[in-house]
Length: 524
Ligand code: ZN
Ligand code: ZN
Image (cartoon, rainbow, N blue to C red; front, side, top):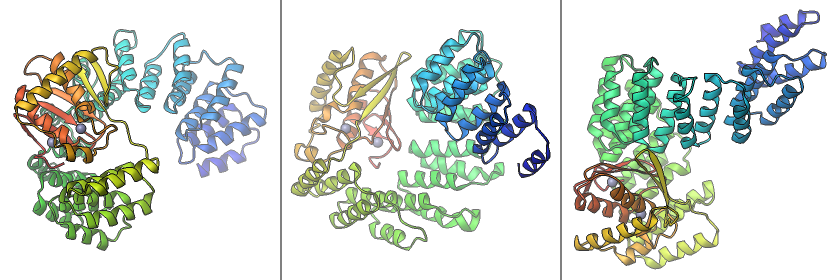
């Protein structure tokens, strides 16, 4: 662009085409803001912006999320009567949709006299980007029945929506659409499919896609390793890691995070240590804070608290709250009050208040039976006004995603859900499950109203799943927070009593409950 500028400055009275060339150049450069400057300069020179000018300038706005500038351009576009220009409007929709102005984007989209695939994709992409995954899927369905059929870009985006929702059924529908369409099954789509199956907890399908891919890149390998890791299948994760070599793909930093996480989830201390030590020497990957975090987690969970602390103190990187929190989690498991307290102090110093830290500290006290300490922390938490994240769980039944909040009574079938919960409660009692009331009171998870464990969101979703799915069908739940101890043991029992496989994706991993046990081996 430097040379372009020099040449541009030599031109006596450049015309619109030349200005547009500069605006376009900058819109894809490292410095998209320059496009906006050139646009203003062009106007100041008395030239009239045309549809190209607007498309390129809007593209620059999209890259730097300059939403107010985009709005000004929108006014200008209306003024000069370019609202019929499909390229200009597509770009405008893209800018609005991606930066939270979904209503404006939707209005433009609805008012378009005709739409191209790009218009649909701009809208689907916006929904996806803003976390409105259900809307993205609805639009995809409309598109399937319309004139402009979804293309590879659409499919990759809706697969990501399905992945975020953990909606396996919908993901499978997209997959079968893909197989009947003439969309090329390229690397991007293959990776998106793998990601969808992995995040929906269907490891077998994820692996099938991986094996069928004719070409794989680092992303494909990393997704496969990570899928095994978060589903608690450490030995397969390590096998895939080893076979990466045969495909002459070099592992990167992300690969090692997944591999170490696999070791951590499975308690493979020896393997984890060995891989960590070989990372730099053998593969030339410098350990980053995430890798140290995995190691601290691995050592801490296995009870090597001293060694974990030592690693934090000797690492060549600045410690952060996340790594301290990993050790704090281990203190909770192993009931180390002393270390836990000093860690919370350090974390608060580094980062200010965070509800999870209070929760962990309270849990450490609780695990040692120090109820007073736990109660004090809870008081501190209330008084400092630390807000907790509201827990929710999603379940997909017959093509619809149902969302349950903790203690939710708003679901149309709420009554039968609560009846089912009662029935479950009775059966649990017969199985000898006794929620330890004193412990329950203080083992506060991350959810609100933790005293009332039986209405934690995943329990509502599981009860709903038991009512609404066929006997023997796997129940899949996505939860936004970590599963609490009591819900974990209850879900194990439910899987046995009702003879169901229940797969729960929580904030950090998958739990596959089957015949009274969980794939995480109670180690999460
Ligand atoms: Zn719970
Ligand atoms: Zn588990």
